[in-house]
Image 1: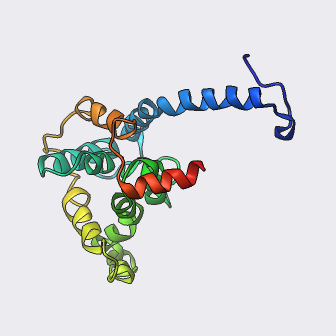
Image 2 (image 1 turned 135 degrees about the vertical axis):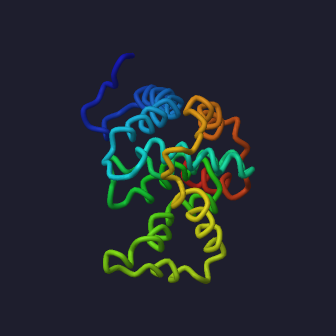
Length: 196
């Protein structure tokens, strides 16, 4: 079978949907390669900074790795701005959504909110509220998001920083986005709900 037999999903057969399921699994297995291509595309993102968004991402991941963060957090740091090209006004949510099935809830939450937390460094210069992040002050991961922005985001625009190359992170990306990455109980429950 090369294509399904239907033009309306309501008319699909068991064989059609088994075929599509197989195609989807192959597509999902190729996600790491598409993410790495997406990171490379950030080298052509808007400018004005001393480094490209691609280099910013490499610096973020390199700093996280050198600080001894988990592989999951290193990959999250690498991908935290991957949404810049397609969702410039909601890049944090896009990056977090990509990561969500593969990372713990804490990592997902940090990446989802890093854009708001990062505003601390610049919003007041543009007439905004630099303390907007304080609406989450009582959240258990508030300080983790503050630390992420302080150590792995706001300081990652240095043209002289010796970032590791993307090839260094590729095996980590492949592990995090594969079955090799061990599931914690929270992720098992979430994945079970999503696939059920």
